[in-house]
Length: 172
Image (cartoon, rainbow, N blue to C red):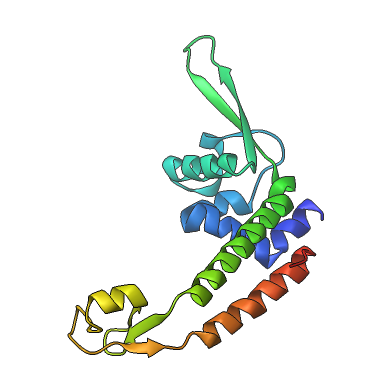
C-alpha cells in the first residue's frame, strides 16, 4: 500500500488517532518527507512544541518514527532529526488485531465459566461468589440481584471472534 493511500485509509487514521490523540493527529497525519526537527514541525503545523514532542515520542514507541541526534558544536545542544516510518503500520495493525482476538477468546472463556448476577437498579454485575457473599443484595442500593443470562454477549463475541479469525486468516 502506497504511503499516501495508507494515510487515506480510515482504519489507519483511527489507529493513528488512538495512538497520538487529537493534539498529536496533525503531526501523525502530515508526515514530511525526509528528516525534520520537532521545532520545524511545531512551527509548520502551528502546534505547541510539547504536543509535537509527545506525538513524536508515541510514534517512536510504536516503531512509526525514528530519530537521530546531532550535537551543535558551538552550543553543545542536541537536535533531534525525526523520520517517519509508516511502512510499519500494517504490521502494527495486525498485532493489534491479534491482541484483540486473544482478549476476546479469553473474555469469552471467562463469560462461559462464570455465573453472573445483576442489580437491575444500579446495573452492577457480580460473579456468583461475590453475589453469594453479599447475600444476593446490591451493596449500593440494597436491591436483590438476579441471575443474569449472558448468552447474547457470548454470541456477539463468537461473531466478532469469527470475523477476526477470517480477517487474520487464523483457524480456531
